[in-house]
Length: 222
Image (cartoon, rainbow, N blue to C red; front, side, top):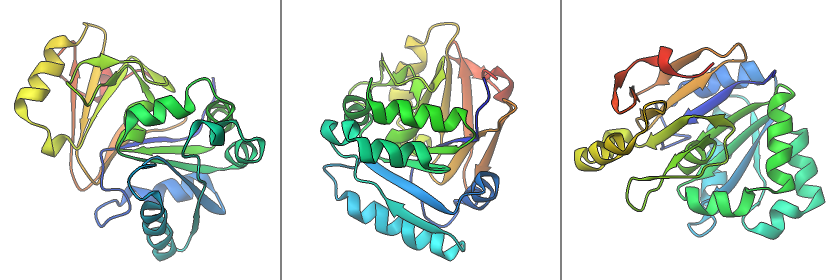
């Protein structure tokens, strides 16, 4: 099925080192970036939006926020229409569990999926990166739980450069043989292009594991 670009960002979005955003802008051909701070609903979402606005302004682009912060917002026809019309969506915030609660089986989520399959660029930072995949790593203990599944059979460990070795070992040990785990550093993106190939960009690095064992980007599903 056709799709646009997808970027899974390991954290610290909209800061120096996030060099990938310029390329994502060019690829999206968007007039503005729609920043959806659902995962920061209880942690000053407006600050993240303001940071994004300043960041993209420095790149010569516009950004604005869309407050899909609770379940009623994900059902709001006007907000759903804005998500569907966007050409570059950035899903941000550190709580993948809240993101899942708000978006799962909602019109807003379906609008995001439809926009992506219609060629829109979709980026998820931190919790946004986690929830875009299925399964996702449960931040409460490192086991696996359901994600939203824009990409299946991939799980993201964000802020991998800050992840404890004990937690990473536990997650890898619990990994089924078919599952690809990607540890993505802050200010780093794992990017899937419309043809299904993957690359890493930004200030840090990406670690790949399949079945808990070290692998490379070729292990990721196309």
